[in-house]
Amino acid sequence: MIYSFYVYRRDGVCLFKTTYHSVDGDVEGDPEAEDEREKLVFGMAFSLKELIGQLSPMDGSTGQQIDCPLGTVKTKSSTMHTYETLTGFRFIVYTDPSINTMQHHLQAIYRIWVDKVVKSPLVKQKGGGYDISDTEFERQAKEYFEKVPGFQR
Amino acid sequence: MTFLHLFIVNNSTSNPNTNSTGIETIEAGPLTLRCLQTPTGLKFILTALSPSPPTSMDDALAEIYAVYSDYAMKNPFYELEMPVRGEKFERGVRQAVMAKEGKGGYLR
Image (cartoon, each protein chain N blue to C red):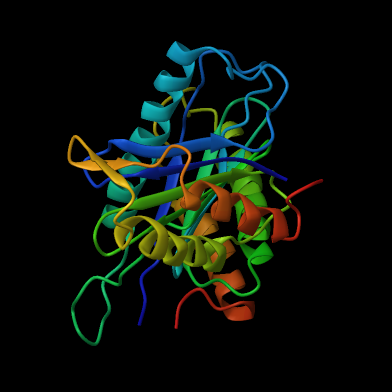
């Protein structure tokens, strides 16, 4: 089951967030708690990336650090899937632990993002970011996620 | 050749009885980090490059827990909540990891 989906700019500004399924005891509906969580999600993705950067080993033949992009973080109750683009956008989706990999789905979502947000003249700019609310991206992302096996439990 | 980092974090959480769900696995491309949390709030963390099969990490962690019980907890000179030192413990950990390397291949 897919719980929620976030898109962040490289400096941590949340460009888009949505909840597909809420969990019991969720903060949904409380804007302050939602803002707080939005910041925590980015903070966790950011600091885990730093941690992984320090843990990733050297390649013995080239002497360079092996590239280890942060993929999934599993706990007993949920799994966080992240995909970071070369331009620093972070696509983060929370699912239940039964979904093992979402990487290729997140890449597909990024392609929708490029088509429907970056290339679209209709999307308004807002403070250096994009105003995504109620756009084609929102609809197509929802449509895409609904087709992912395991969207509904 | 790849490297293997092994961290054993002797971490007492503030309340060991809560059913908190800490991080179990982090997958970052070829790197996998796996954490075993014991009911007493101890955390054993193992990182590996492309372990195959991934469950071999769980086996290694379980074995390291057994080694910890044998050579740290049963050691009369070991003080609780202190870093684990001891030749037998270190040898035991190395053996547990090496045994899995032979089967699954952590090191290449």
